[in-house]
Length: 324
Ligand code: RIB
Image (tube, rainbow, N blue to C red):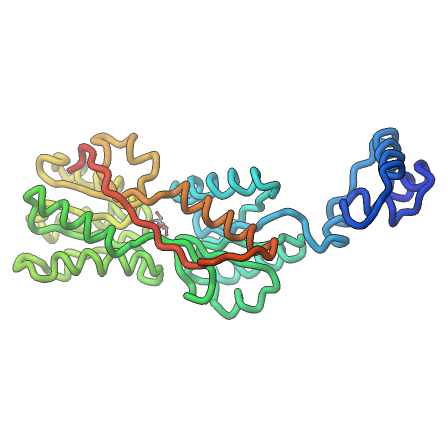
């Protein structure tokens, strides 16, 4: 395989000149540029990307660290980020952290070794200190780590209020909540939104809140247990669509009809919510906009461009379907 030295020799110029042409940096006359480009074509030379990164100290690559790529929310988010980055000339390295801080740290180390230019992170385990020590820009998405770090989130609490109020407007009382993991900030915010709406109700009990851990299987188990302890439940607000689908499965297994016997509403607006039977009513996050904003903000930070706002909280919207 031809090296940069072969190209320089073939074109009759120095290696530094070839490098300036390759990296489009510094002055090169039109005639010299033509000679180098002809030599590159003749020798079918392909620059060594790692060497290029070392020279430029940039790779036009972004890192993306997500907590659970099995949860349909994250692939949809990754799609938006990758589309936007690609249009702006960047490739994306996707990392799955499993909400494990050590695994996330290992990925951060690998991304730094690969000279990524910036990282987008959705995590509740990576510490603010870890991010502040990095020498490249970071944008947090979906889960806030610190107000001092550029962050893109949605109004989780208001979305939860909207979901719970909607069940009440549908005439449902005795409304339960399948919450996400205790350590995840947006799960806490959604639970708080639910509490604000039900806390004044004489029917509300603390045991109406069960933990589904943002997963379908654990949400099904938690909902079955809920039905056993509280057969009076008429409505469920699940903190994400994956758990709402798990709750619908539990209703089916328990012989309850949705929505005739019980209304169920989710949160996220993943595509799968339209595939369930009945189709799931949900609080839709502007998923594509979230990913697009995060990628654009990160690339502006990488380029040292002025970023006026670094904290965005997007509104969510209620999408009514058949499950309520
Ligand atoms: O479904 C997974 C959940 O985790 C989503 O609600 C999203 O907000 C992420 O934080």
